[in-house]
Structures are given as C-alpha cells and as structure tokens.
Length: 96
Image (tube, rainbow, N blue to C red; front, side):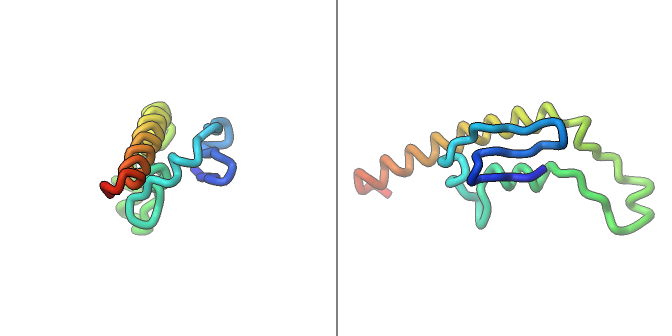
C-alpha cells in the first residue's frame, strides 16, 4: 500500500487504486502523519524478522481484509474532511 497525497490517491495493490481523495483528508493528522497514512501503515502486511515467529504466528494476510480496509479508508477520509472543516470554522470564529 502506498499513499500519493499530491495526486489524491492510494495504491492498495497492483490491481486496486483509490483516486479522488480530497486534499483536506490528508490535512487531518495523528502525530506526524495523516490519519489515512496511519491506517495504511497499521494494516499493511509485515513479515516478522524472527524465523520462529514468522513460521508459526505470521497468519495475517492483507488480501483477507482488503475490502474492510478499503471501507475503513473511506470512513477515515470522510471523518478527516469533516474534522478539518469544523476546525477551520472554529479558527475563523476565534474558538480554536
């Protein structure tokens, strides 16, 4: 999975690409990265370095959860855009 904030896109895998992500969705940040990037990092498939753990406990396969992650990205995108709009409105009225 790879984020392309400037292009408003996320590459899920070689077959799936999400386009049309508004710039505001990338502005909502959790620490030093956007909420969308946080989701991508948390759900990407990782291979444990320890061979025993890799052999016996590496059961997570992104492909098994792809649709759920795409739904989650849509929800996070919507919440991010709405949150940015609310904070901007508060900033304009002097409340934030």
